[in-house]
Length: 76
Image (cartoon, one colour):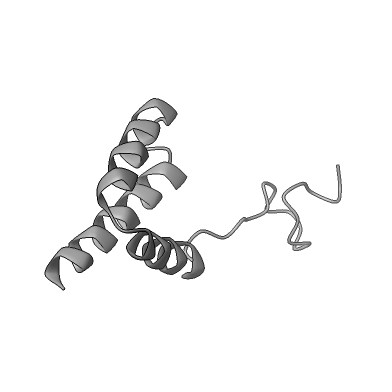
């Protein structure tokens, strides 16, 4: 159980680093390849579902002058 929890935490951290661009594509690819070889797919699926489904990574408008909710401002 502890190992599963540790894997989930590691994956959540990696997702956060990638989304925030703290981990570049080369390091991310190496990380995911190594992780996918040793972590069961059900653990990876659970961790990704939790990390990405939490609402922490929502797309926000580039322009704050409008509230359209779109990435591109409607005034442009």
